[in-house]
Image (cartoon, rainbow, N blue to C red):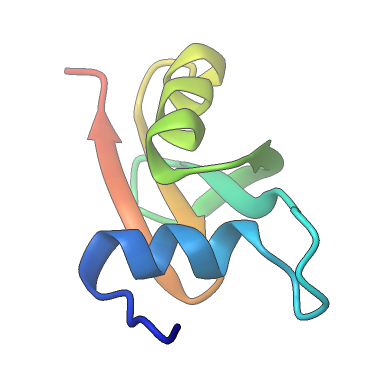
Length: 81
């Protein structure tokens, strides 16, 4: 039986399943930005979904602005103000 995934379900499947069919967690990067919008620091977040990575990013953030990235895709910008 063949079936197709689309939209967010397809994105989550691609993020969570490796090429050999095994479960893998997605690598996210959280960047802390300085007052001029340049990267001041960055950390890896190991998460299985965007929601999980966003929760972890919010827990680690200091004051100011952060960006959460999954590969080349910007997931979220968060301002503390």
